[in-house]
Amino acid sequence: MDIAEFLITQKPNYINVGDETDLFEAAFTNKIPVMLKGPTGCGKTRFVEYMAWFLKKPLVTVSCHEDMTAADLVGRYLLNNDGTFWHDGPLTIAARNGAICYLDEVVEARQDTTVVIHSITDDRRVLPIEKKGELLKAELIAGSGKKCTHYFCKKCGVYIYADYEFAIRRLTVRTKTLLKPKDFPPQAHIFVKDKDPWINIADKNICYDEMYDPKIAWPKESLDRYKKYLETN
Ligand SMILES: Nc1ncnc2c1ncn2[C@@H]1O[C@H](COP(=O)(O)OP(=O)(O)OP(=O)(O)O)[C@@H](O)[C@H]1O
Ligand SMILES: [Mg+2]
Image (cartoon, rainbow, N blue to C red):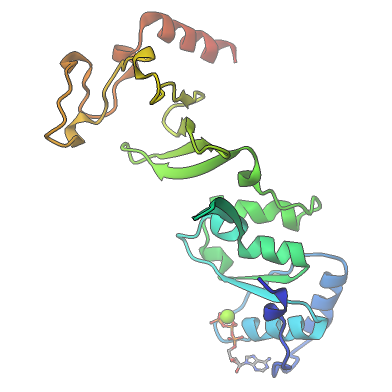
């Protein structure tokens, strides 16, 4: 990716309305983020284009919407023939290259997405790229309709644990391996109602149509341990 593609080479036609160009320049010099608010067609986009040209800075524009995720801004791992590789999102591209990142319609973005811009716009000035750590994250919706986040090893892709929104203060660790499946016999089969008809599960008494109720399915010692943990932590 060539950052020069984001440079505005032709002077945009922008007529100064008040002291907005001086304000923007002062904010730029002092590294303060700028929020533009105004009715449609009042010149916000044109103004940013003009300022990017004036300050000779690349302009990275993101059209925000409510389905946008933090990964759409920061970046994600993608797959090609050689395996996984990291792909910078527009905010990361802008941060790495000292560009102006214009988050158009930022109010449309969800709060869990815009949270990534807090640390880069406040005094910390850092962009957290969580996913470049040792674990990869995938955010999904569980059968309950609530969110769950699955974590995989960055090196081999093995699914390690999940953090379910409904499972307060506990993580679900994946123990079973394909190499030694007998070491960890199943304790419950969940969402059996959705299984394909050709799958026959022998242990009918540990089948649950949907998610099991831990109070019924968990061994007593596990329930006691969890209760004690919640009381003391
Ligand atoms: N100060 C200005 N100088 C020159 N042209 C302007 C100015 N303000 C608005 N315009 C004209 O109005 C048009 C709309 O402006 P622009 O697209 O920047 O609005 P906007 O505030 O970004 O609107 P929206 O909220 O719909 O995105 C521009 O294409 C330009 O022709
Ligand atoms: Mg606009």
